[in-house]
Length: 175
Image (cartoon, rainbow, N blue to C red):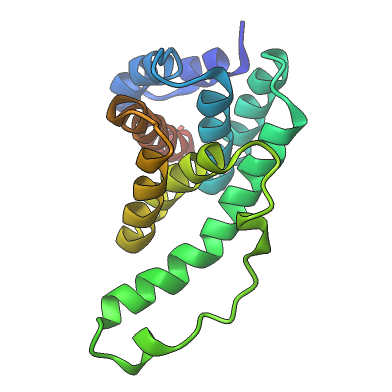
């Protein structure tokens, strides 16, 4: 039995839809295995739920996911943890505020020094940004991903993974 199967069985009755969704979203045929696992890993890290994170990590290792995907997923979760707050603040304040013209002055070199490829890293970042609720970042990453020839259906599936993992993390807190 996979670690995610164990998580599914542990979810309370209030999350029975999430039990089914957790199984279905990880079967996406629109994402490459690296994209699917990278999105799942980045989102599991972003949910901050150790049990869910450990389950996704265990299943990704069992699926022989490369170290590069693990590293980019971690970097996407961490950098979006910073960027989503910063850019969401600027978005809330609006273009008429003085903050809109200020340089972020935050180190983000990891965004250009990816281990996998730029498009996959952007997809991981898009999924995490959707969890963190940063409209500016979601729009920015989605544009790069689409320009990188990722289909709308693949983007949709990445967001389905993000939303389901976030819901699973909440459900685990209830169990």
